[in-house]
Image 1 (tube, rainbow, N blue to C red):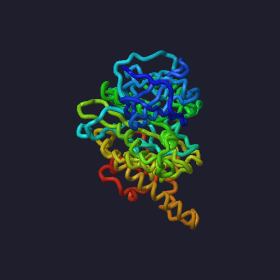
Image 2 (image 1 turned 60 degrees about the horizontal axis):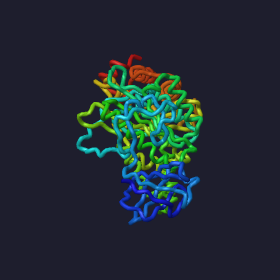
Image 3 (image 1 turned 60 degrees about the vertical axis):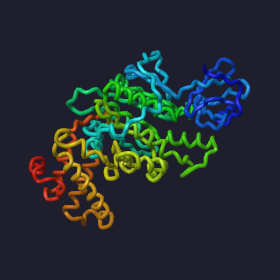
Image 4 (image 1 turned 90 degrees about the vertical axis):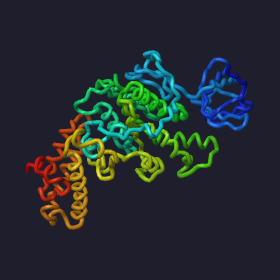
Length: 457
């Protein structure tokens, strides 16, 4: 039987202290009744002897030390799950907000996830097609991978995320079930409406479960949103044998919410004011991606974060890079040239790409083609630097060819329309078409047998 407590010991921002509690435990959910009618939810974040510190999801407005009843529920944060989540929109703690009523719950799970034996993890293989050449061709997303997108304020990461949701698939010839779990944290109302409208108009809303924490929603709720979304993804993947792509935006909002709550608790800050456990919290989320032995489904993560001041050494992208398997970097200079998506190819990489492409997955020439495109584009930078010193007219004929290749590569390969959905064959064929700008003897990263088949210039 749950014990109810009358009154509070203290209130500090979103945090409440309650003394004289019995059998409270970390992460336990708490139900508050304010003035006998208004219900609020909280979560225990610290227990010391008979004192509990509780985060209030909805904020502590209207709460006072005397007018609040507190009930410890005896269980952690949980969410009801079923396949009916697909096609629905929820708030940051998993409550429906689309006026379609509650879902039929098939199972209830702790949002912190189930412990996964590392020995049961399978190595990620095969790829997820996004329809975007700069990703599919050069930084291929592999099933079970965690591949973040590093963006900046003002860059079109929201449009890119929406395009990936519209176009993503398991490939061009598979009958396996595929769905998307989309979680947005701290987004403005117009951005949330953009996502909703885009998914509905493109006809993909029925296979998207959407979790929205808006900018005016409680900061504490922002810490729960990615956990709720990943719990839904794990259920669909490992119980319903579906391949799930999880898009989390913006992880910077999540980290800043952690910093705000940590400051309210009076904790000693670490780098740039973030708590010392930022790394472990991010790892707890990112490591929920993967493939489990004996299960057909998979969870693939594409977290998006905005780098403060475009600083890739900032704690959020820095720690994310330690945990994840590569990164896709958006570039402000390309964006200034009206190239969309402005993906900076050279600092971007997918560490698992080699294991999910090639013969049997994409095409036999994929790896060699990607290597050659990287190499050629790196030489474009050298030619541009030289041209800035001596002038373009003084360049050698081969350097001028590299400048021609670089311009075409940025405009035609990296650049594509927001509704342009390219197959993997179209992406690879376009790469070869651009390489034909260069003399054959310059293509030193491609096996001669593959070169003879695909280089026809």
